[in-house]
Length: 174
Image (tube, rainbow, N blue to C red; front, side):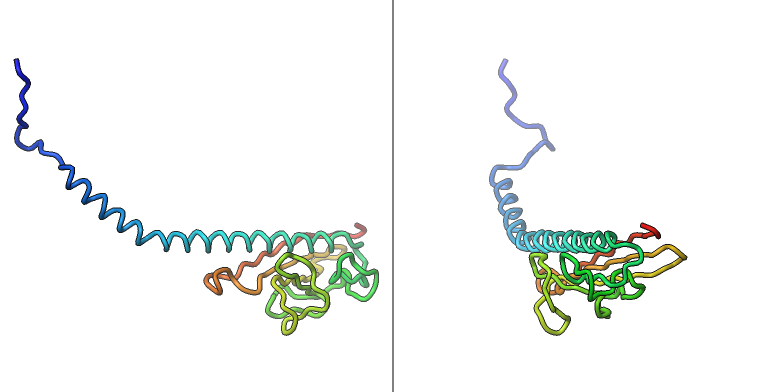
């Protein structure tokens, strides 16, 4: 017996030429979309990095403030390590709005997270800004909130500017 070498009707497949042509079309489309994918991945990576840094720097400032005694109203926390005098300590005040910082309740960091001495919104080139607010929702209780933000968003202004806010409660006598 010899095998049947003819195909029954309706079982025709793709030829090698048709398959190669389909792969060429797919490659052209993939090459056209690839630059968009690279930009999207880079922007996502940068935004994620900046968001993580703002959270880290807000947490650092919160820990510095939490280390003060409840009644401290003189420690300057705009410098590190803190000065025993010249600041507000845990005095009620401040702002959690980075666009409206309150004097002595704001500090600035460079791109590497290093504290910049004497920086302000208009002058020194800062990269991260931290503002904090101290409130007293009840007697013997203080709420400390720190908001850190970035001067610019990733990709030269594309996307939302990352910011993070962390809060904690401090009780007297601790």
